[in-house]
Image (cartoon, rainbow, N blue to C red; front, side, top):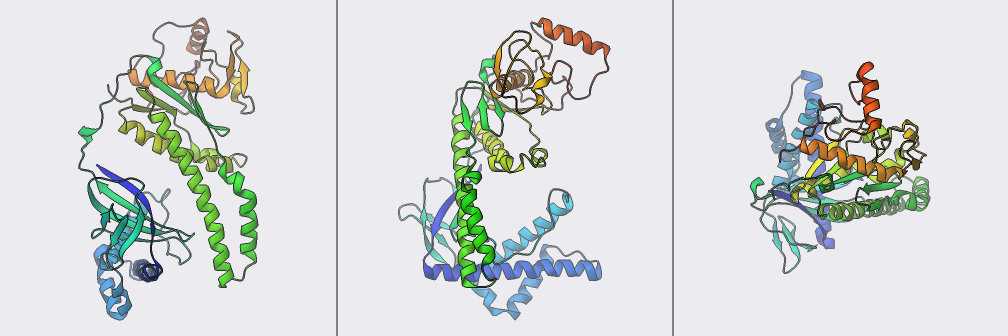
Amino acid sequence: MIRTYRFRVYPTDEQKAALSCSFGSVRYVYNAALAYRCKAYERRGESIYYYGTVKLLNKLKAAKPWLREAYSQCLQMLLRNLDAAFSNFFRNPETTGYPRFKKKDSAQSLQYPQGVKADFQRQMLYFPKTGWVSCVFHRRFKGGIRTVTLRKEKSGAYYASVLVDDGKNAEDIPAGRNVESESDVLGIDMGVKTLATCSDGTFYKNGKYLSESEKRLKKEQRNLSRKKKGSKNRAKQRIKVARIHERIANQRKDAIEKATAGIAGKSHAAVAVENLNIKGMQKNHHLAKTVSDASMSFFLTRLETKCISKGMHFVKVDRWFASSQTCSVCGFVNKETKDLRIREWECPECHTRHDRDANASLNIAREGYHLIARLPMDGGEVTPVETDKVDESAKAPKKPDVGETGRVPETSSLEAPRL
């Protein structure tokens, strides 16, 4: 299997100067190849692909001898990345933007397809034409190195992303655990106030790291806007702003990694979450900043990866499932709780006092169990409230998404993994 490890590297001043030249060469060739492909199509209607840009690279090396100082395979890899960028754009132009030119002030990167070596004893990484660079191996990896991407962030920090093939196959992943009851499924309700509320009573707070650093960030950005463009003071101030952004991102990532590791380390056989429309939530100008600061997409991605590696089932409940409106005790659907300001409510039927997020997590766990076990939505014991709702919905035309009882129909497009 292929795994990625990210390490912090500390090049010397001499190595930084050499890497700066390599970054400039890569940026120059990328922009020249992008402009060449755009002009070829605008003037002649000709589509240039990877091998056409390789011929351009040979001509550029002949005209610009300083391009030969950079590692040749790094220049070839960026041409492949440019070709992949165009392929992704034409495949799905709505989600993937048109390839853009690289800027000097943006993050810089070099991709090494081979030639990189790791020395764990000396804590160093070897890069062709750069030499041995000090590296902090916070954990060791086993397997062969496939590709290494050396990246310089806007803050001036250097990171190496090492792609490793550990030699394991899909068969080596632990088999899925048996789901015998609803207690084997951990339901997770995600929100803005609390990032994740689990059905077992645990919850993970939303750090709101952007809000905590927003005052300082505004001050530094205001100072940046007053600096003269092209001056050294502006370059220094730009690094200060970039470091604040990097610190916020690191805080957010660290919290999410710890939270997902804690959830994946539980004894449950399955994890059920809501299939949230995060992009739609970001369109609400009242919640956009908070939703983006919570980084829900990254949370769900990391959680799914860790659960599958632990042999746990991972299911997504339909976003239209009324998890927050349904009483987890009797099944009554309280439509008044659509208002997000209502954090606690009492069921009119069974008079049970519910916390909004905790009640939703219990309903998500139950619905996740139904999806995994492929049980009928109306199977088992039916409460009187559910019976009345079924009788009323039988007379009315059926809705295509959610039934009157708040249950997801059996014709849901969600497929549960086989046990």
